[in-house]
Image 1 (cartoon, one colour):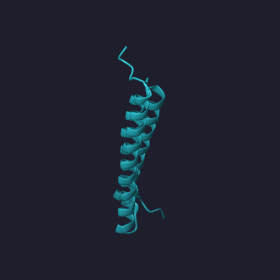
Image 2: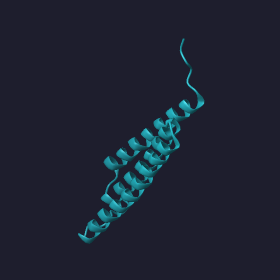
Image 3: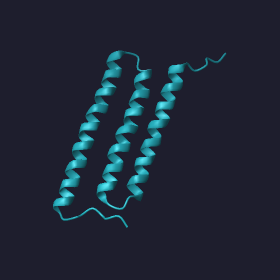
Image 4: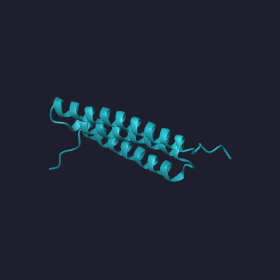
Length: 104
């Protein structure tokens, strides 16, 4: 006899699928946007949201509160490092004289 999925499992799966969607959108932004600045923006925003949704889905399935808090801590650390890395890449690129592209 099969055990039907509970509401938390459905919600966890929906969050994981949503997170995957945002990762794919960020990747498309990386491939399609014209310059490094807009690509960094797409990756930083979409990947942070995608990871947040995945972490939320995993936290719902965590056995203990400490496991869920560790997952949330990973997400917070990734947000800080992603923002810092994007800032440093953009600043270095601007210092090298690469300007953002104007609208066509």
